[in-house]
Image (spheres, rainbow, N blue to C red):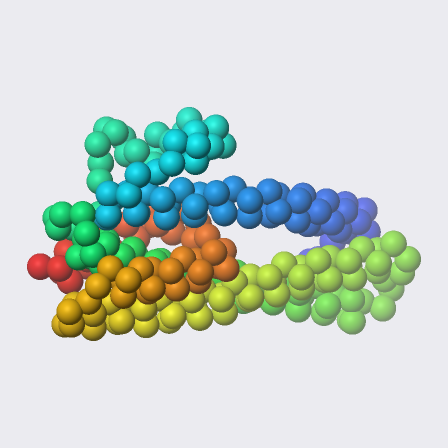
Length: 237
């Protein structure tokens, strides 16, 4: 058993590392939420400008440029500066907003599905790690003092991290299903004499859902971008 157990020295260092990492993550999470909120505000302003021709107020536009880094602004514009976000060819108006929103809902629904799978995988890995630590505590009777305390701290911190990822997994799954339902509502609207207000109501519901959901990591978008582009073309062809 001793071949896989950490020494008291390294166990204490690892416990301290996890504590510091948890504190840093907590601080960065708060700052990231503020940045994400601003990014969502910019996204909504862009969608309304792109789909309806509504101008972005100069004061708000200045704030966006001040708060975002040059790298983020370049990425948002696209590598050429002329890349469009939406495939819709409709002129500005209710139809274009509906089509742009459907494209957004399509991507959000599927990216959240992938994010939920990643979060579930990390949750399972975290549970295995917690089980191993608890096993070492329960079946190593010679553990005493700081070594025992360090292992308990490791188990607690890992449990908190694991529960956080499990919460994300549940939230991504729930939001993905809700966005799919909104997409179905837009699909139904296409068969009716809908108005701008009808589309805006659904878009507003979508915005409220997104603001209460953690962002999907960029690497998930990069991994599945080509696949989802093909699926979207198949849907609209």
